[in-house]
Image (cartoon, rainbow, N blue to C red):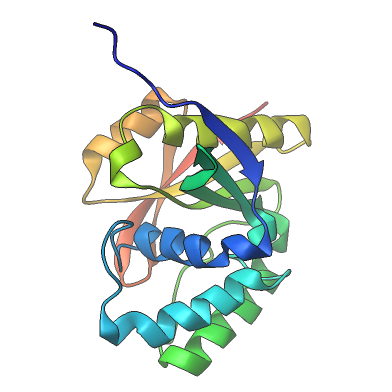
Length: 194
């Protein structure tokens, strides 16, 4: 018997998706599993992050996010944006995060810059992993970058996840450099669109 794959639709996020996007971002930096209950000690940070995701001009804005849906329910998301906008959005976003959490994020490396389309955070609910939803979201944003004149697409991979790095290499990404972000070392990966 053939496996049944869900019918997945991709769409632009709306401000109503902010709670889901906040979970995507926290999962992306491994502060929360997409399926886990929100721990009490993260509730204030999460609520503040939801507000940041509702804003137009932050890194984690709904305007920078694509949502994967199955049967009208969000099952995955990818936050991605023009690297030329990164520095300005980062200043606002990190300032807002620091006000609430006290986390000093100013020592993070500059993850992206002009000429790059940056895939920032992606997460999929566990019941929908392994069926190609992450790949759909990634290809959707790579196609967007290609059709909008970007020279390359970039992303970061945790150095402790060589299997994930190999996956991105199979998708056309190559190691560029090491970066220290959110208290850990990451490998920056680049996919040239030229």
